[in-house]
Length: 352
Image (cartoon, rainbow, N blue to C red; front, side, top):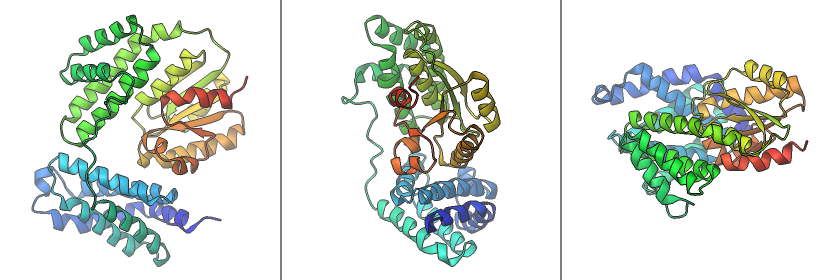
């Protein structure tokens, strides 16, 4: 039987179109004096409302108020970094809670109030978004810093040379992935969040890193003979954040797996067809944003129905990897905290 939390999340999803319209209707007059400055109109209010509602629904699904609170802290930091007035955060919460009270049944309101109150309490605390992901705790912090500095400056060629020199000097490709690329990409997200770089910088650095990974791939193929194990790696439908998934697929190849990397935004039935065609024992799925979580749940459900226990499923992605209870709600066989953990999980799940 569904818990009241699960019922509440399902109600939010079923009324999402009506809720987003109601939230936009409430927000627009309260922002009318400054909205044009930020390019905000009613359709955009509706889009942002849907994103917030997905965050809330997924946190309620996991029955974890802190998951929603962390999102609100991230949103506050992001808005501050982009010079949007502070009151937008509380306005969002107030109008969203008002719309949820108006549209959804009374029995769902205590759950919603509990999660909203947790977010408001968290927002009374300090902003910790000044903590860099590149620090002395990492394995190669100086190398990671130099790599990121070069890409922020737009020098992809020197960044590639830096990586290749490090490998020539004895740094493993796996360490490059996990101790340079991974913290740098997290740091890029933080720098955009806090308004220190633009979305153009973020896209350039991501694209450059993918290109450098492609340059390293011929070396990866030589690392270990194939062990007969086959894996498919894909992002669920709608998910565009694929670099972490690519790292996981490449690390499996370093350990002798044959991997078929399908990339971003893959339709469910195409993934299933590939599993059958390649006789894969393992499927790695990435879902970074809660707005794509329903697609992940649906895909796992379809695979379990159509393939029984014929393929093991590992899931990952930023939100999933930070919350074991949330990860468990998807029904996968395992959840990886990062690309580096995939190999150990894969070898446990697939014995032959």
